[in-house]
Image 1 (tube, rainbow, N blue to C red):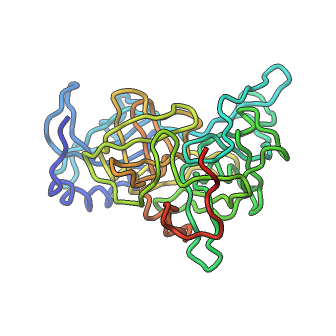
Image 2 (cartoon, rainbow, N blue to C red; image 1 turned 90 degrees about the vertical axis):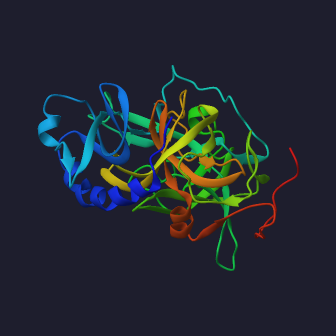
Length: 337
C-alpha cells in the first residue's frame, strides 16, 4: 500500500477545501477526501480529490468534473454510516449481556438509560428504541473540579434533540441487557457537534474504573494522527481491530436523524483495515497508536473503512484532558480487576 507524498497533500488541501461544500451539495455525494486516484481498479500513484457517493452511476461524471485546478478527481461508491447500534425493545427480543465489567475501562459497551421514539421513514415501523455504543476512554475536566468523564460520541451520548445534562447511562447498555436504575454508571455532562467534533463526556459515578482500554492497556496520552501509522480500536461490537491511517482530510455528511438531521464533519481521520474495522455499536471507541496514545474518536464507517474525529479538537471542545495513570482527578480509579 502506498501513501501520498505530504507535499502533494499540502498542494491539494486548499483546492479540496475550496470545492468540497459545492460537491457535498450535489445529489448523492456524502464525502470529499484526499487519496490516490484509482482507474479501472488499479492505483495510479496520482494524488486526487476523492468524492464519496452513495451509489456510483452514469450521472456522476457529469456532476463531478474530471479535475479541479489541475488536480484529478476520483468518484468512489461508499456507504458511510454512524456506527451506533439501535434495536427495538419488544417481548420477543430479549438481549443477553455478553460483557459486564465491575471495573470500567475504555472499549466496553455503554448506552443511555432512556429509550427513544422513532417513526418511519427512519425505521419501517414506529416504536421505542434503545441505543448502544462504546465508552472510549476517560478524561478529566480542566477546571478546579477535575471531574472524571467517560468519552463517547455525540450520537451515543445525546442521540436526538431531546437530550439533557444529567441523562443516565448504563453498562452494559440496554441493548445488551443493562437495566435502568440498577446498572447506571454515569450521567451526561457535556457534548459537542461542530467542525471536526462529534463527542460527549459522561460524568462517571461510583463504579470503580481504570485509565485503560480493554485489550490495549493503559492510556499514555494523546497524539496527532500520522498518515501511514497503524492504530487499534476496541469497540463494543467488533472488539479489538487494527487499521492504517490513510487520510486526515475526510469531510463527511452524516445523517444523525432524530431531529438533528444531516451534519458535516470536517478533517476526519480515515482508517483502512484488511478486515472489518468497525460496526454498529463501536461509535465512541478511541483510536490508539503503537505507544498507547489516543489519536481519534471513532464515529462512522463502512466495512473495512473507518472514520474518526481527531482527538485534540475533541479534548479542546469538551474542555478536558485525557486521564492517564499520572493525571490527578477528583477521584482515583478503582482497584485492579
